Length: 272
Image (cartoon, rainbow, N blue to C red; front, side, top):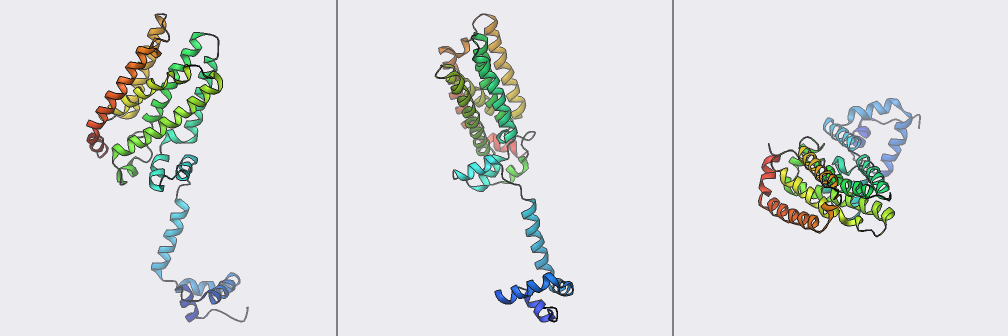
């Protein structure tokens, strides 16, 4: 191997991809030990091909590593572009999900105390977590992939609903798991669900005119203020009774109708 070197013709054929498998393997084995021939081959590579190769390498190196949620979406059949747009939301990443889990754990532990205030704490916190997650799932100020989302072949309305649904299902799953594990079959395991849906739907409606994060924060504060007001009047669970559940259901239905009627506004807001 030390007496044989890659001549100009062979270097040109190799750099152009014209050599067969065996000959190409022989040249590559020689190049590993011969600096002189590596230089000859390098100068023979067409500049256009070299730029293309470096571009492919840079793209592979710079490509973001899919997170656990994105990989899970692909496993259940969601296509890669949609999984990427959903997984880019901060509230669908491990730090946020871990924070949700810790908050729910403390809420459920409080609910396990033989005291109505502990149960009220769980019921008040559980609906707020999905709202906060949805508020951070889209919008100019919260979405790290906001500009990419605008350029993607998805309407802003469709992307908003997809992320909101993903956040809601994830948060609800955590709340159900934590509540069922520590509260068993108690009614409190599901009493927070309709209020959570109502607050989330209202956040989406308000997002047609305002940024999602302030909208979600304002609704969460109003919700906690309402729960506190009934608690002060010695009716801590009034918002979770029959009247409260019916009201929450009505809010969900009205909000769904408003979302449908105002769906075009989300696209115009996103294009600003």
